Length: 368
View 1 (cartoon, rainbow, N blue to C red):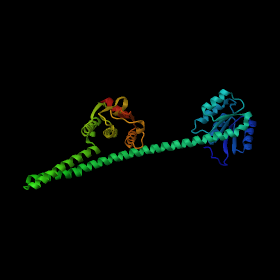
View 2 (cartoon, helix red, strand yellow):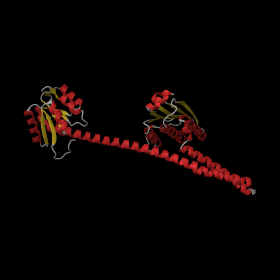
View 3 (tube, helix red, strand yellow):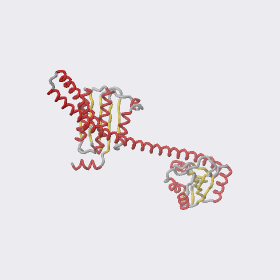
View 4 (spheres, rainbow, N blue to C red):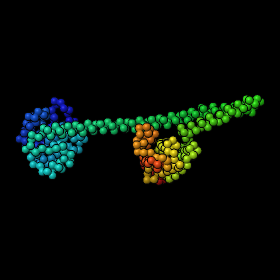
C-alpha cells in the first residue's frame, strides 16, 4: 500500500549497481523535501529477496544491469496483486524499450541526466497507484456485496417457496378439510330438512361453499402446484391451460426435453419464470398468441416465453419499478443461470431463461 499524504516516508527499493547513482537519487529526493528511505540492491537475487521480505511503496530500477535488465525484475514484482509503482531510472534506454516498459505496466521512466524530474514522477506514480488501489478496494467490496445480495436472494427465494408449500399444506389439511365437512353437513340438511326456506338457504350456502373450495384449490396450485411432481413439461402445460382459460389468449408449448428427472430446484425456477412471464403478458402485453419452448440441448436448460404483444422500449426494461423482471434475474442466478429479455415496441417480447445443467444430470440423460 502507498501511504497517504502524511509525513511517513516512502519505502523505495532501488535496483542499481552504481553506488554513485544511488547516492545521487537519494540526494535528489532529500533536497526535494519528499520523505523517503531508499534501499539499494544490485542483483536479481537480492531484488527478489527484498520484495519477498518487505512491502515497498516504489521500485526504482536501472534498465541495464550486470547479467539482466529491469524487465527481469519487473517479471518478479508484477506477479503480485497491486504491485508498487515500478519506475525506470536509467542513463541508457532507447525509445522502443521505454514504450515496451510502459506497455508492460511500468509506471514511468526517468533519464539519469534529468534526475530533477524524479521527485515529481514518484509523487505522480504514487498518486495513480493509490487511486488504483482504492478503485480495486471499491470493486472488491462491490463484488462482495453483490455476492452477499445473491446469497440473500437465494435464501429469500428458498424461504418463500418453503412458506408457500407450508401454506398450501395448511389450506389442504385444515381449511380444505373443514370446508369438505361443512359441505357434507349442508347436504345432510338438504336431504332431511322439510322447511323450504331452510333448504334454499342450504343450497345457496352449498354453492358458495363450492366456490370457496374451488378458490382454495386454485390458491394451493398457485402456491405449490402438485403437477410439478410430474415433471417440468407437465407443469408448464397445466400453467398454459390455466392461462388460456383465464385470459382467452392462445398459447402453445413446444417441448424438447430429453432429461426426464431434472433437479427439483431447477424445475421450480423454470416454472416460476414461466408463471411470472405469463402474468406479465396477461397484464401488459395485449398479446394474441404466446409461444413457450422448453429444451435441454447442449447441456443447457432453456425456457423461452415469447408473445406478439405491444412490446417494451429499452427504457421500460430498465425501469426501477420492473421488480418482476429483476426478481426473475435474481432467481435465475440462484441455480447458476441467467435471464435474457428482448423486446421491441409493437413486435412483442421474449423472455429466455438459460441454466447450464450439472454433469450429473447429463450423465442421467446419457444413460436413459
